[in-house]
Image (cartoon, rainbow, N blue to C red; front, top):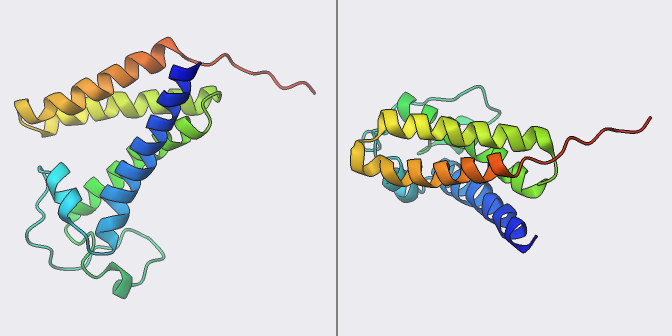
Amino acid sequence: MAVASWISKGLVVWGALIDILMLVALPLIGQWAPFCHVMAFVECGALCGLFCVATMLTPALLAGSFQVKETALAGLLVFMLGAPRALCGLFPGERGIHLVCMASMAAEIVLAAHLFPAPDSYGAIGLCGVGFIYLLLNIPDQKLKDD
């Protein structure tokens, strides 16, 4: 059970801290270094124009943030892949979020293989592949509610 606890904590770190905080929240406040280092396939250099994706954020808050369409879409994609991982780590016994987390792993494998050149994609494919297999082998039992 100790391994499962560490895996759950790792999913929270991966989803909440790395994906959401480092790759989505930091660019929203103008800190682009982590995003541009990890997301090498998007254009980070020419951040001109304003791209707001139906959020409640004001243009002043978005200044210096996701302004190029490809960059904004990559940020939203990272958020959509990271949120299920964080939730799966926070609620490890929930079957539904567990299956969604598996789907996020499979989606990242496909995206990494498609978007990154061969040597750069190996890390994401390997890490998500191992994560997918672990999650596949440890699907929680479905809990039935007593009425």
